[in-house]
Amino acid sequence: MVAEIRVVKGNLNKLKRTAAKFAKDVRPEIAAAINQTSKQLRTAASKDIRAKLAAKKKDVDQKLNRKIANARDLLGKLYISEKSLGLGKFKTSQVKAGVRAKIQKQGSLTVYPSAFGPKTKLNPYVYKRAGKASYPIKTAAAISFQDFVEDHGLEAVIRQRVKPLLKNNVARRMKLMMLRAKGLVPESAYSRSG
Image (cartoon, rainbow, N blue to C red; front, side, top):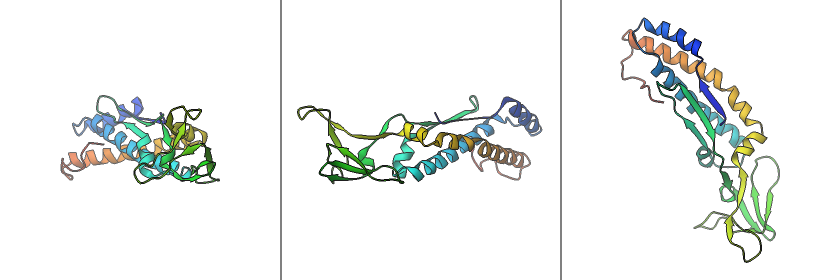
């Protein structure tokens, strides 16, 4: 897990007192703000990771998962998958020594000895024998995604973004709730889903 997104209980009570004038429950609005924050955090985390890792957006986004908040449970989370990225997800080329791959944007190519099979039309994976020639063939893994994020200090960068994003989203949702109560914005505008 990279980050937890939550509203402190004291702040929640203050928001409830403010919203009591409008006879609305504030919890669904807070849940929507938390979900919007987790979406924005996932996008920002993906950009930060792709600034250092030479992987496609689709592959990075598949490794970032989020837990959705609801009115009962006002907690959103952003998870990083523990599964590793396969070598076939990077730019690879077959050389005599094995397979060369560009894993990080900065730095040189990494050579994986005894690996074979990158970038054929039907199969983009890279394989490696588990040992001697008679041993089974396995898919070669490039890096552990979670270890890469921790090693490059990206977890702290992602956590720093939570508080300002959540503050902005909660303020925006409270303003919208008050405008709805006054009849200036229709009830169907800006749904509560995250």
